[in-house]
Length: 131
Image (cartoon, rainbow, N blue to C red; front, side, top):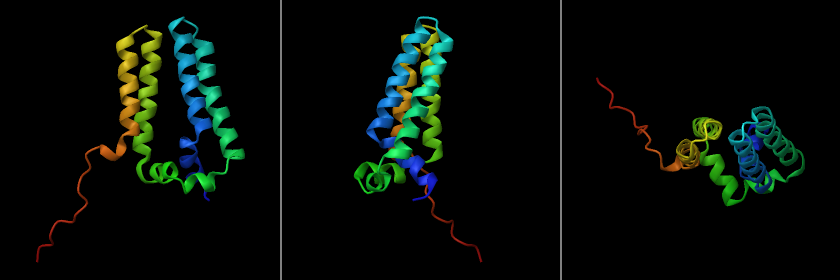
């Protein structure tokens, strides 16, 4: 399997998801309590450690053949990943400002990133040729 496919599929591994969620929760709590350096360290270190562990130790070929693996390969383009990252950034800003509403908006943006299959998509039909 190509590295780009492994990087994509590892996002739905339970260890990676747990690392990301845990990092977000701890980092947001630290930001809320005005500890930005520790929050940044946690927000980066835990997901990176989770990614390294999954990429090196997990059987990603088997994960690719599961429904989750097939789903992420079909429905998680770079644009959806960027939306998820923007949502995480909004949550961090919300935690730093102690704004529950901004935290909630960030969480909704992350959910929108995961909901990529339901985004409106332009039709890829070609226009009729003119002769």
